[in-house]
Length: 436
Image: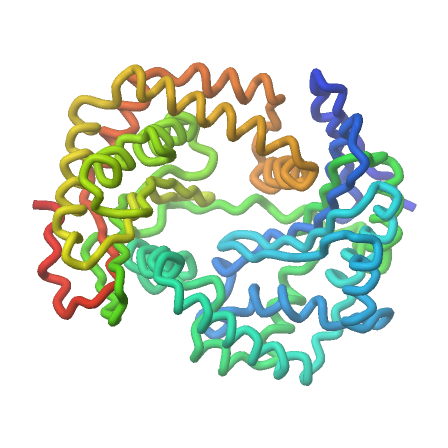
């Protein structure tokens, strides 16, 4: 049997230890042993998402998220769910643009079962024709539910505007037409190509023993490990994807208008991401943020208003969202653009930056109190080929953000041509004034 390569990546002050093992064939296993907890979170991550689909495969990545729980050669769908339910655990999955994850959270004593179940569904899904037909209806219902929520749908409309009809621009769920046309053979082809150990990362966090996790994962993947295979290279791009500007209107007879004004942002690994996090948090991340104060508190223009950023491997986006009465849209847009111009020209105040840093610090620490969050963090660092800083190092990077750094990233990103997505009872997109 070929030897695995194991190393220790991190020792935290709280006593937690992060270890990494690479099995023959490139399957990577990372764990974080966390003292004092009785839970364990486990996940199998696939380095493929909706961005990896061809136009004919649109929706396949998310379709698989459903199908893999429908049965394996060892277990029925009911047996899969019953095993985890019977111990009070949680079994689920999610699909992103650039990855897919199948995960479970259980008591520490039930981790061996969770490893077995999650690895089983990922490696041995039957993908039967009948299951495809059954889940097609479920996914069409999911799409209908999603499209009935404009506050979610606006993000898909904005992505399509920014990236166009490309894998990054298309919705993760697929469309009604693409899901109706997907065949079992098309979905299975996506599965066979991307669900290979060389393109996967396994992660676990909580009261876990690294050597035991490695032993169990290796046994579960044994029939699929190819010692001659090489680890799938990190996702990369020779150039940034083309990004577009303009206005897109999704005309609907809604009681409330939803609008998202945004710009190209930073790629996921950009060193300025900490400054951007402080910017979006201070600008629109809480009740004390500038947008909340200007739009909701002072003027009563909207109930929900916030700023956000999202990074991909080679590009990103930053945006401002508001949901308001249709008649208030022009005023909200005017305030958005006035505040953008202000932060581009003058930056945020020292107090705003300090509050933003405090919020980012708090969210960083509090978010890592959960074993599922830790499982996510160590997996994403491995998937993205990034270093894994300690919590103290993360906080130091946030603390190091200066008002000048925040101003610089605002001046670079928010001074470019904006894009606007609107959902509401409007007939003509030309009434929305931006970039003037």
